[in-house]
Image (tube, rainbow, N blue to C red; front, side):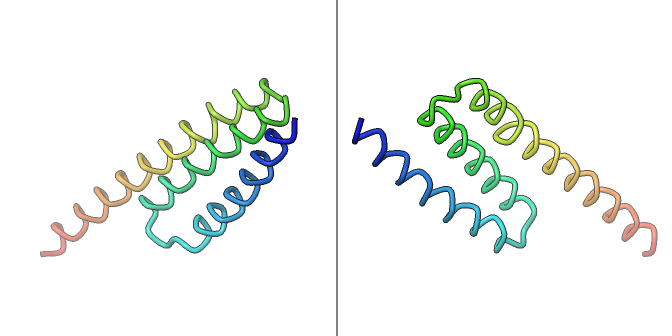
Length: 89
């Protein structure tokens, strides 16, 4: 029981550190990777807090779907910007 509480406390500290890193990261690609790590840590925290249904939702949405959407959006924006630059030349 005490080991689980210590692990939960350590996970909360890690979540805080990774969330701060996500806010401070400026590159969208790196930010997506950090957000994915944050989602994994939150899923672990919810599992430790005996909320497996919330953990599964967190895992699916925050660790997979959201970073994927960010990466696809950045890729599309960069492709459009490259086409505009080629058109101006």
